[in-house]
Amino acid sequence: MFKSKIFKDFESFDPLLSIWKGSNNTIVFTNGCFDIIHNGHVDSLHKSAAYGTKLIVGLNSDVSVKLLKGDKRPILNEQARAEVLAAFGCVDAVILFDEETPAEIIAKIIPDVLVKGAQYEIHEIAGHDTVLNNGGKVETLELVEGISTSEIIERIKNL
Image (cartoon, rainbow, N blue to C red; front, side, top):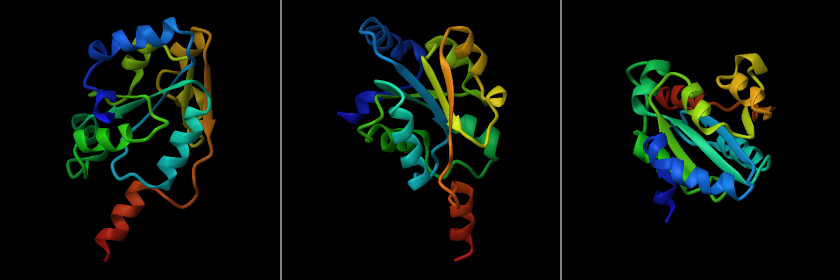
């Protein structure tokens, strides 16, 4: 069941990660708030998954989203957002984190590939140093033009 892909912390995920690493999988990590899933998210998740054999999505917890986006966000709570992400066939695990960035969880996972949107320079991507220092790669993706969660929320408010 897709809910078995959701992990509240690294400790609960670590045994599965050990199995994956022991089976020579290429571990890919991406992250975000994924507050209202849209076609831009779908595109980036599928492209991220193509870099390896296991895709881990770091999901900002409700606490983390509030730190980044303010008190009115998230729109959907962390469990709802995690369930939507876990339902994607290309997503192998969803792991929540409370910090502003996923740097701490990336340091524990040490993925082979770290993927973020091309709006960031590689040196701006949280965890890039950990991945590069451990022989991994950092990849950036072009975003689907003209779509963002914040833009969708504004359009809804203006209806």
